[in-house]
Image (cartoon, rainbow, N blue to C red; front, side, top):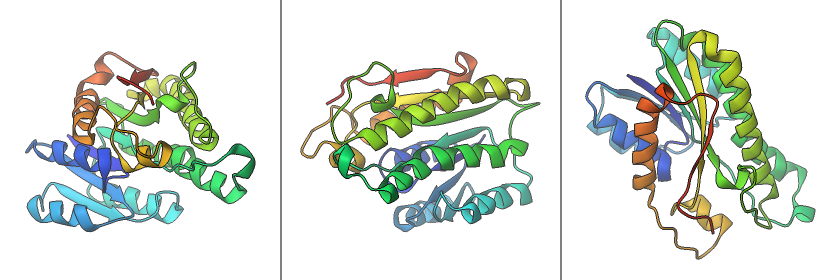
Length: 231
């Protein structure tokens, strides 16, 4: 199995990488802006972990990802769009630059990466795209002041998931979105300073890894809440 994951240097993303690498038959391409933790893993798994460091919102980074896979004639079995950005600020005070950052990371980068990797996914062997969403973007869920940019961008990601599931099903590509609830991460702390979540990144990563492997057998185009609680 070959897995590509963005936002892989910390939190849930890093734990996902670690858990996939425990399987000797799985290889991982991890994308992140930070190299510290992934470099440590690279020494432990030199043959099964490939790393690309760069800004996922940059076309040059996306092109680099495609080139690295294409050069080795790799077919992507699982793509996990995990990279995320958040701004916690009153709606009236959010700047255009801040809004662009959140939307570029949370929706545009996922859109363009899926688009770029299409030739390397699906058809003979089924591929699974997993968009990591949020309960903040789940229709009908509780919403919180200060998170209008973040939550609306995750709502857009959910909508993209539904569209692509229909459009890509003939290519044998399943697309699902996991709407994550409260997990003790750096991003949660930015959204709800001081809040203690009931789940740790390792626990959520365990669920996501299992879903990545088996979820496409049961779901396509689904926005699935994965939440024991929201603050």
